[in-house]
Length: 202
Image (cartoon, rainbow, N blue to C red):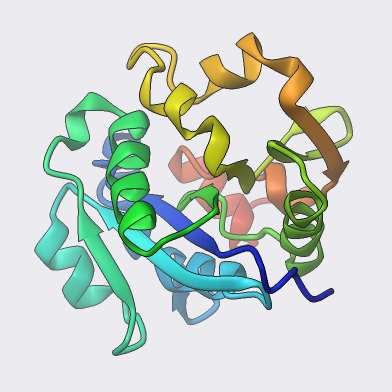
């Protein structure tokens, strides 16, 4: 799948969280020799994605130093990570606008198993004119979510308490659902989740 050359899409990896329940930044958790942050950045680096940007926050210097990202990786800092994920989205949108993007992919760093085919289907939906493209698996909404530039004002205007989900809830007519894989809904929130991921638990 090759995205239309007329559209510039930027991938935004949301990695500013404290990771309180799991004992530190999820961006630095290891999955088969890669940090979560490096793995998600690689997953979003698909044909049709002009740039992947990591949005970091808590322990930003440590995350940048230890995430084992490529030397040319683009990283920006959310100076208000305690305001929640929406603040990271806003910071990412600032960078996407600076890069001249027509659309963004939003993907939280704690979903490191998304398949490339899922990312490609989101990109294809955006290239076909979707305002918002969201993958789903077994009735559950997953990541990454694709947001065309025309809906960014709605993201910027969403209440902090509700986050980007407010845009999805308030504008279902904008959403195109695409087929996702199990990894697109596999979030890692607790040590038990992480243990299952690496095969320590059944």
